[in-house]
Image (cartoon, rainbow, N blue to C red; front, top):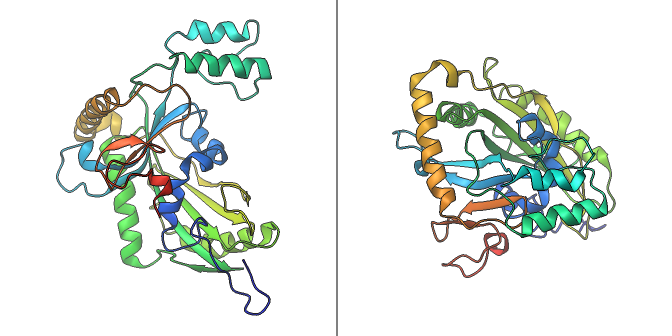
Length: 311
C-alpha cells in the first residue's frame, strides 16, 4: 500500500506491477479472460469464455522448423458442443447461434447450459480449424505518467517484430500483440493513472509493428486498488490500436500452409491426450516446471502446486 511518509508502494507479489508481470498475468489468466472478451471477439473467437487455451506453448511442440524458439504466449481456439441440438433446445424460440455460448442467459438457461457442459456436452478434442496466436508484453507504470520496461530499444523492437512474425509464419488464422501496462495500486480506483500511462506509451507503441503487418495490436492499461490485486479490484479496458487481419500467407505461401497443417496435426494429438472438460473456459499451460501440458489449476508434478500458486 502507499504510505504518506514515502509515497512509495509496497507491492504484493500478486500485483502485476513487478518484474514478473507477464508471469503473474499468466498465473491469473482465468480471472483476466473475462475482461478480454472484446479483444478475443476481434480475433474471431466470438466469446472468450467458450474457447480453449494453451498458455506459454513451446513452439517446438507445434512445428519442427528450425529457428522457431520461445513460446506462443496465448494459443486459442473455439469450443463447440457435441450435439448443438441439445444446446439449441435450452433456448427454444430464442434466436441464437447453436454452437456458441450465449452472453445474456437467464438464470434457468445458465443452469441448463452448465448442466450440459458438466454432463460431457463439450466436444473434445476440439476442432483446430481456427487458431489464434498472441504475443504478450508487459510494461510497468510505478507512478502517474511514468513507465518502465518499455521494450522500445531497437533490439527490443526487432525482437518483438520477429516474435509476432513467427506466429504469422506458423500459420495462425489471426495474430495479435497484446501490450499490458501494469499501474501502481491506488487507495481508490481512478482512471487517471491508466490514461496517463497509456498516453505516455502511445508514441512508443507506434513502432511496435511494421505498417504492413496483418497482426492486430491492443493496449490494456490496468489500474488496481490497494487491498486487492487486479483480479479482485481493477479498472481499465483493453483498447484496440489496430485490428488483426486474416493471415494472408495462409492462402498464398506453401511453406506457411505446410506449417499450419503440421501445427494442426500436432495440436490435435496434444489435445486428444488432455482430459475432456466439464466446464469452460478450458485453460491449459505448458508448464515450465514439469515440462508437461496440464490444466492451469492442476497441481504440477514437480512443484506439487499449480502454476497459479507458484511464487
